[in-house]
Length: 106
Image (tube, rainbow, N blue to C red; front, side, top):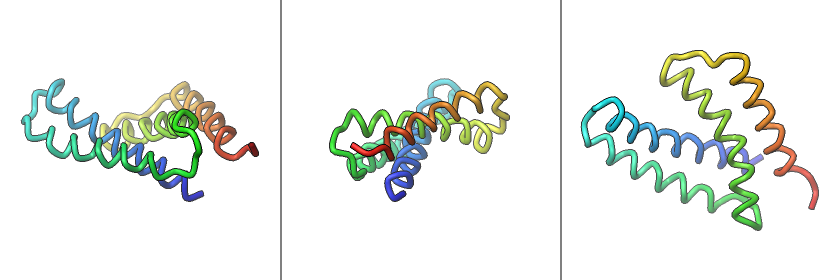
């Protein structure tokens, strides 16, 4: 369960970091958005090293499913746009896959 929290934290920091670049480049906001963006991406990368998975590729696969769901939460809470039923279905499939990879015995 600790790993799920780490993956969730990593997703927040990656999404925030990328959104900072989006804000600067696509929304033409201040270049100063890049400072917290880069710091956030550094925290994201650090957090992924803290999960209890032997192989990086497996950690990235698990993280991918959680990232997709977290991105839709960002869409709703930060960008104030409601995900549609296909977004939610797709995220559910990805979360299910991530949980299989995370919790099945090896």
